[in-house]
Image (cartoon, rainbow, N blue to C red):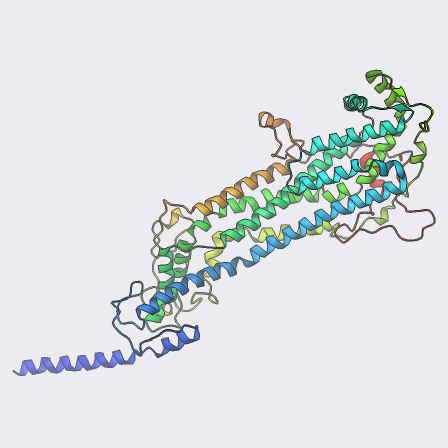
Length: 556
């Protein structure tokens, strides 16, 4: 009897102690934390209740109702998506802003170059130019169409420009004859043999094609990077990921510990599981970005001898020199044309038989070397490309580094707090599982997120393919090849718009004579006009700053 009384007394003491402990763990702190986070639950227990109803959090005594756990699940999904959006904001902004700046720069460069040529040729050649200005307007229209993604073969387009210019020039220089359309067609067949414009067309074609290929591909690369970053940052959480996020972020509330944050390694495993497909983007992303590959290689081309700014800036002088060559050799050109196409019919006495040599008798003011910009940063394009390169380097390994960037103290985890003072998914204490490696296949044993490694995310795979295609185009652009027009049957010949060289290509600038041409177009403005020359807008600050020395070295 005494033994039974002792047992009953002991049980009574344990029961009272248990109830006292149960009452001590109330849920007031959880209620306050929920209000602070903006939750408006219909009911939050005053003290812990049995947790058999819970489907994600531990089912012992809990401060959570079913409604609370469901709401926490939706909120954890929102928190995760917002965090990824926040972490990728700077990356996305970089691509958006730099794409916009480069695109605006290039289009303004084309516009200012065309305006400069038009003003110079109107001032120098007057009526003969204005009557034939559509030849030059078409040239710039086609260059712009190519840059903006149009189906334009640069080599064919430039060849066509010189053919049209030859036809117009031949007609002007032989105004005493009737030049029919059939005769002009015959003339065009002899363009390559005659070389009426000297070596200017060949040099201009080499520089324009490589410069435009690099510029167009570079801006397309920025566009693809922008689109990929924007699309991949819009993550879609799987049910398994949502469960893991809820367990990590909000189950401490249910355990009466709303202030306890997840252990860092615990957070890393959850994020690596949820972002497994995004991490698989990294190898292709790095190929697209890093110094030894794609974007930065093409950026080097933009800074080199095929800098689009230095190519386009003196294009009016180059074309004017070609016109001078045609004028100087007009008798020889006409003789050879007459041999091949026959003697055209005389125009008769009513038509002016006066030549057009007077049109070309103006001289232009040569530049002084000191007028060229001498700042360390160089031209506007130089500064813009350097800025883009530095920003691109910072985005290397962005997607594989994303879990580490998210699992920091001020965002998610307990940071440098003691290993025993963080949430490990079950209780407050040390987290023992090892951190998984990056990528989908490495999540096969992820202890926190059930990942089906046999089913890659098709949307992410599409972005990987987009980067792969763009990287290939960028590498071709670096070598001067526009793969849009490349002849697959003769890959090694450099067919298409580029020269096909694989390293630093010859620029056709060296070993040239330095004597000035007989006549050049007038870029100095009307005689006696004290006003300064026309200054282009900000995107083309050096349009009128190219020295005669540089021109002579490159184009004579």
